[in-house]
Length: 292
Image (tube, rainbow, N blue to C red; front, top):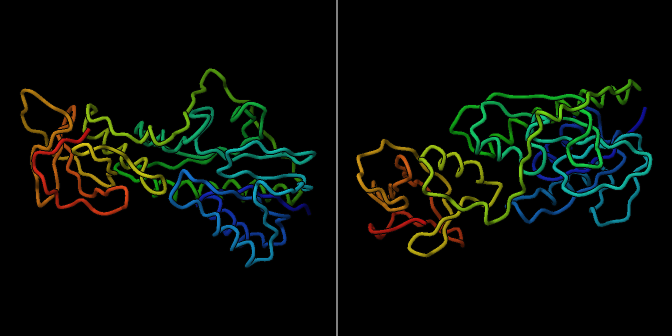
């Protein structure tokens, strides 16, 4: 029986590590490689290291000197090139490939309002996310949904894939795969702080979906109120009123201290908003406020 090498980051990586240990035991893991991620509020770096220590599993930072010797390795939430010798790398990707190759595919799917999200297990390739597909799992979603809840849903898909493939590996069964259809390929772009800015010219449901899609564990949707940068944590779409001359971003009502903002179409009530020090800005103190 072979053992497995794991390259893990984020909650999904931590969840997979715990689930793998529970299902197959820590002795089936040769070692784990992990890394910090400054783009999220909680990267689970110390959690992964702690879980490895508790189960006597060797754990390396990605900058350490290590060399996998197992036949197979899995990469979950990994963002860097992995140099392997004879080890075969299996990547798990947050989309139903060939849709949304690239970065932040789950956030992209939620922003776009997809009714289904999923995970693909594929063999690593020279060009990212273009390798042959081994297996896929999907789950239906309903809106509104926050990305943290969507992550929890796809984490179950992750382990279902890992479990299925690992059972074949440990039983020396061949892992078959299918070539991707290039005609159906699409790409998801990487996100940075500039991409978290709200566009108030969009309609209210789209803005609500955007806020939910870049919330925790990401840093959250950004806007300015009276020239001060803030982050909107939660919101609620409410019925529109007639506004002959619309000015998206202006506060039109304040309900129980919560501002109702004019959007390109529709109205959005801001139910949770914080400054850069994570201090709540509700109730709103100034009625004549503009979000931009």
